[in-house]
Image 1 (cartoon, rainbow, N blue to C red):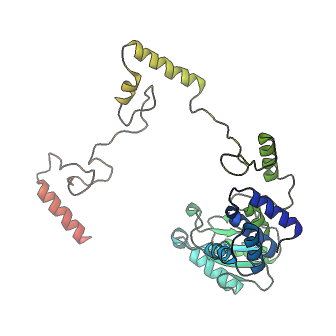
Image 2: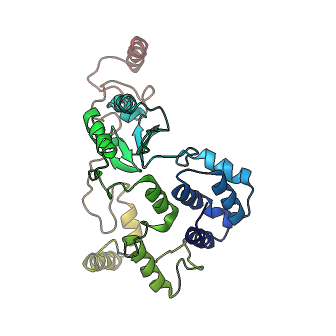
Image 3: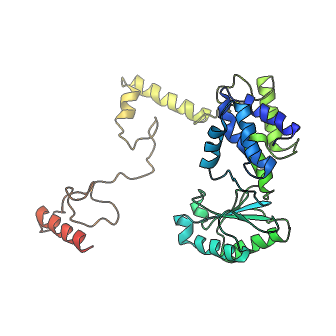
Length: 317
């Protein structure tokens, strides 16, 4: 259930959206902040605020894995076990943490410090195997690294900084931030400062009711693609082409797909002829391989022979 203070913030969240039901996801994060999980009372309060049924709210809460129906620990530790992480040791990391903590999927340690889960693709394949704490990324984690991370949580120590972002504050605090309310009780934090800037821009409280791109929208600064000197160069080149009796658009179009924006500059790649791609086997015909050319002139085989040999290779493979 929301406290009186959180109830006011929940109502402010609802007011951000032209359709009340659009506030459901942030409200569920706020429920998770308040109760440590998605409680039945929280579902009922969301339904009341948004004029929905409890069944409609519950359907959303059970669809997304970030909403937990069971009580969570102080920190949520997630181990990615999707393909990229699995082939780089993610499964071993998860199995080791399960054994160390004596926990299964979405279970919480007896001291209430850790909830453990394996997750499907956390969207950071270059950092595989990935472990997150309160949704903050710790990349390229070995089994020993992950154990050290968990040991720090169990000991109540300050966690090491993640690969990027702040030190994990706890899953309830993270849920508050995910609700779109910024850091908990951080009146002078970056979110609060951004909100103040938006308020000054709109000349009223944020989010502006007339914001064209959602709550708290602030017009972005437009930075020209070209500097003033480059723009002047382009215009001078176009004027010279017109003075020669030609149309600049026709001249630019005649450069082909590798031409740069007018005036033409040297392309940053060499156009490839079909059949000349690096590593391509000579003699493959266009009929058998998209983009491949005919057999070279010095190849005594006919195209039919080349195709037949290609079919044999495919069968052997």
